[in-house]
Image (cartoon, rainbow, N blue to C red; front, side, top):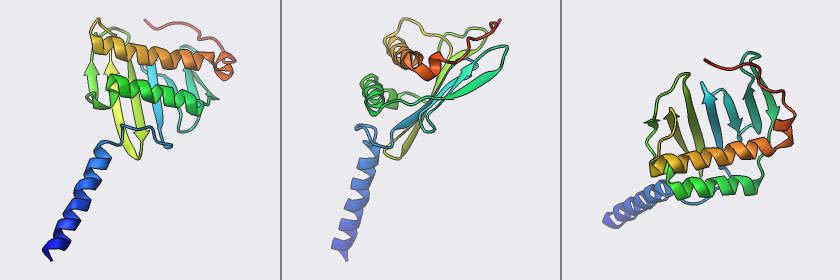
Length: 158
């Protein structure tokens, strides 16, 4: 009976270790929602292969936007490199008006993680790394034909 209990505990402990390290390796189920900008109205959703653009005075518009497996792997690798999976759920940076920020909802290997960044960046290492990640994704979005075919934003926020 003691051997069975020991083996059962070993299986449970190994299972816990695997789930804690699940963000260490890219998984085929890796997807994320990335919202950014004023009131986080610009949204890339790789679960649904969809992008929502904030047109300011004209509301929002959606389009299909698909990232390749290689693009998603590159994003995951940089997320891992900067330690994004260990960031706190909410980070308050330099507050500005109107409200601006970034939000990630990430799924990898069945594990969900959220990071909500409020405000602008400063000169700290973490801020610079996070800014590099967001710039990488925004540039990737802007390079897609489906994004380029969207109308220009009309107006501005005060």
